[in-house]
Image 1 (tube, rainbow, N blue to C red):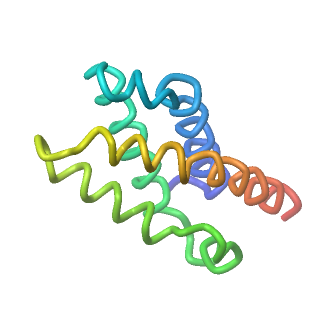
Image 2 (cartoon, rainbow, N blue to C red):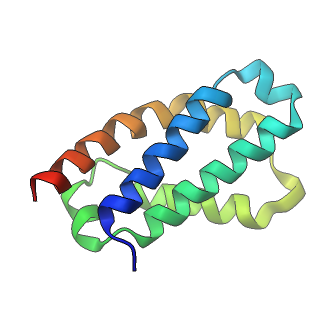
Length: 112
């Protein structure tokens, strides 16, 4: 089983990839490769969040753990019914905040 710190690092990496490659809403709208990559990165975020310990989740209620996992489930099972605009909205509204919050989680884990 992976450590919480490893899971947080995975989530940070996914946020960074999303923000670097998929944050432009115009590009998201027209580029199916960017759409697919962003969808996959969001799925990985959700998978890592689902494996996070209850202790970390309880210590950081400001992070919408359940919503992150729920988004992963929707993306993984909706197949061809994903609206790129919805993914773009998640990216612009949620990922930058989550990225900052994950820095705090990682620092807390390092402090032990």
